[in-house]
Image (cartoon, rainbow, N blue to C red; front, side, top):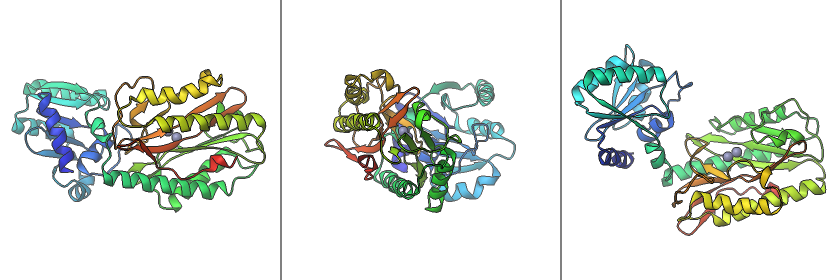
Length: 364
Ligand code: ZN
Ligand code: ZN
């Protein structure tokens, strides 16, 4: 952990910042090892104050004191008996900060107002910052990659178990519940996002919410699921068919698979995220379905199921070894349904390494 903190401190110094207030919960965990989760942005389990020059603090409330002391090695634990601001006031006085950065992507406005008042009182300049810790998180350590691989492996075991039980007449909601129950029974911390099961026409919405619709033979069924192991996420999509798929369904699955293979072949260090998206998108465009692939090709995965870098037209930054990404092309036809296939891969020195082994998409 100390090397990560050192990197962050160097970046703060380069920007002329004396400290960073970390409020985003996965950033807090990444930097400190403190695993407590927030129950929404208004119920924070604490914040970090990382100074460029010296000590780092974990500010939390009494309920977390023991856990913080056990987990956040290298951080001074400060418990706030009367809320965050009296504690920050004392720290600001003793640390003599001049320029303090905060995470403008993740701070309640009401907290910002209190912070601004305190900063004005102490003569501190507040500097909004986005993406600094997130950027560090994009490059996975060996230990992080091992946890991600465990999550991917468990994800596939859960999928295989539930796949064997799929039959016409089960509802989307029942299948989603079965998946999430199986995750927990097999030792996952829980799902990394609400499981998507979208049968037939419901699959035309990339972010469909499971309904009471019953699975039927012959139609494509999108199952998009992820789980957490040691805080790290998996994310995998399969499109399955009960019974015999018709010619159109088969053609769509083959097309999406071809796009996915093209994307994985293009995924390597030194190319821009947008390049990988373009390569896979071209396959779908050339088949006349460019308008039916309305989302980006993929995203980073780590402590958050969606994090940087993205494989999208917006990302001009170059990929680097150690980044973990999804490759998930899809085709969505209103009234008919959808097909999406999603695997995860890690960028290596030479190209990329696929983290998935499941090949259920070859069965259909
Ligand atoms: Zn997914
Ligand atoms: Zn995804």
